[in-house]
Length: 295
Figure (cartoon, rainbow, N blue to C red):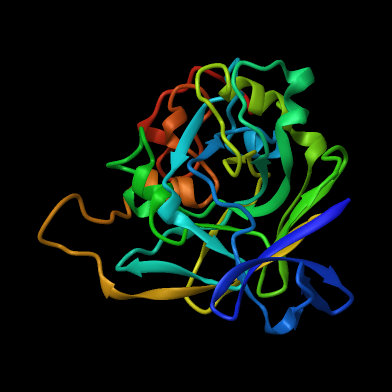
């Protein structure tokens, strides 16, 4: 495996590789890992994300997987890096972490088979697909503000080439406490399948980022929390949650909500699947279910 990082060095983005406790640029300049200002390890034109993919997450939602993957989009302005702050705008309250693995495209990719998709992947990185569920009511279809608000897609610290995604552990820790603990063995659709599926109709270009899903255990975090996503063989991505410097404007658009759907999703359910799973919790009496047992 080969590890690459992008950092800010002497005011410019520079590609570096680890050498002990240092990072070394191609021209020989060195900086301590602890002193480095990390940048995202890739420069995507688009960030595409799969919805449900991990078995534990499906069980947590008491639902069933769709027959094929479904996706959403995060704008590149959501992109952030290892060590950067993740902003929870005021007065929002339901900001959730989702530890994930990011697939970085290395070659222009269109209409390829799953068997060949690996040839178009530059490598993999650690990602955290944060969701601002306060806007779940108004953006339930697109999830644009839920998933696309500024800073909600930190990735890094490295792009790792030659990494085998099979049988790898993924964990999320909040203030040192494990909150998510899963394995890529849980994935219904692997990395190659996701790339091939998306590339049937969307041209993927070098640097593009595909997020591959999260295991169970996504929950809200608050300003001051330190969130770390660890992926076996890829490293650890750490970010600190901070409050936004000013409130979301109240004179335009839908406002942040703490409706039952918002709270249910943030706390490990998902009323988007009404009628497809057995409801539970205080709001269960409001919804009829098409299933009689947990899926």
